[in-house]
Each structure stands twice: as structure tokens, then as C-alpha cells.
Image 1: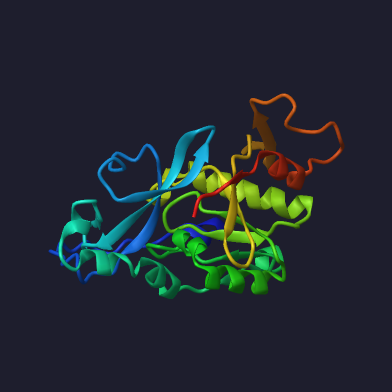
Image 2: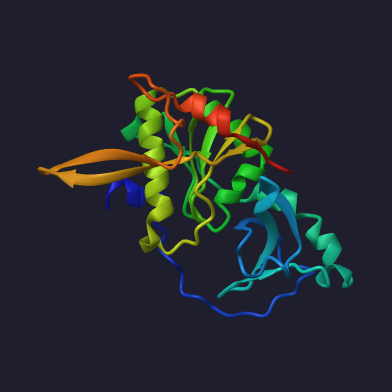
Length: 247
């Protein structure tokens, strides 16, 4: 199993159907694309809005064994459900995780992947503070391209580190073989307390093979995205394109 598989692949458990009590089963936030078909029915709050259009929302899920059930507005009118729903922040704060530093990247890239709510740990200030400490930085760059995928590095990384980081991000976003639902092609910026911005990068990194070697190419629809300099400045691109999140 390669490094990329170790980062993101999860062995799926055999599903077991069960009825749930919405007053008792823990409620967890789940980041969803605005085009998710259940968005009109679930209780949600905006997370990322791009040019006035909702792009990502936070919905609220409960584990029903073979599926997730989502809190709906009518659910919140039922006795006991609102009280259980109100515990969602504490639930994600306490959701188990392990921050793993990658030796392949000289401990400059961290992952915490493989569990159902891994991506949503970015909504926990305690987790972000620990990630900052582990990576020795005060500003994080975060990738959550798919469900159960979370990869983090320092915003201040050099060109080679960030190019590798974005390459892995785009690979995970494009790779359907992992069986994880797509979340977003965007990346996120955070400090030790909260996620502050989403960044639609405006480019993609593609990998192709030539003469037995793997080569990287960039593609973009924006002629002025890359500055006319020898080396791409990723921080400059992120600063130009970042969007405040709603939390």
C-alpha cells in the first residue's frame, strides 16, 4: 500500500441497519456540498458562500449503522431532540483522532484520516490548536477533499512542500476508488482557534507519465493567476482568492 493509500483509504465495516432514537444518538456536524440532494430537507447552516451562492453547508448527522440519518427542522420540534442536537459541538470536540506526522514529508505534513468525522475535526478549536503545535506554526493549510480525509500542513511551507501537498489534495479529490464522498476541491486556512477562510485555488495539478517518469502539469482557466516569475507563489494565490467562512 502506497503513501497515498495510507493517508486516505479506509476499510469499510459491514453495515448493520438499526433504528435510532434521535434524542439519544450523538449528533455530529457534517460538511456537505450545496448540491447534495438532501440539503433542502436537513437542518443546516452556511459554511462557504461564493459570489452570493452557497457552496458548502454544515448539516447534522446521526449514525444509524448502515447509513447516516440527518436532523431535520421537524425533528427539532420533537421532545428531547433539540437538547441532544445542542451537544453537537462537544461531540465533534471529543471525537477520537490521532494526528500523524508524515516521515515522507519530514514531519511537515500531518494527517488525521480514516474515521467517519475526520474532516469535521476542523470545526474543533482544540484539534486546530494541537495541529498548530504539532506542525510548529500559527497558521494551517487544510485539505478535506473527501469524507474521512484530512491532511494539514503549515501555511508558510516552501514551494516544494506546498506543491506536493496540493498534488495529493487534487489526487484525493479526483480519486473515486477510495469510496469516500466528495466534499470540496477548495482548501482551507485556519489559526489555532478556528477555520478562517476557504480557498478556491483556481488551478489544478495533474500527473502524467513520460519516458518512465512522472511529470506534473498545471491547468487553469485564469490567464493572470500565475505571476510571471520563475516560481509560483502559492501564498500569494491563496491570499488573492480566499473567502471568509461562516461559523
